[in-house]
Length: 115
Image (cartoon, rainbow, N blue to C red; front, side, top):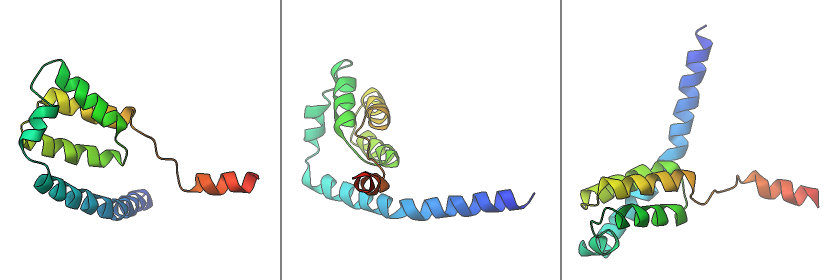
């Protein structure tokens, strides 16, 4: 009975170790974007309109690709810049559900094996 929780703990630890480099990369990228993009640029993309903000959030989120975990970090940064929660919610939902899906690495190996 003790084996299952122990195995779950090790699996969780392994998954966290795998996602740690991704999170560090996202934090470094956000620090770079924070210094390069002026604060008023967010107001140009998200003007505060109840209709346009979620629409722009959905558009930006759907063309963005990457790990769904990073969308929450970017959403937090957008919140700190004063973007509305409607836009952030649309951004996160579209990132996770509509965003560009990245096929697993083994897909290329499988396709080359079929030839």
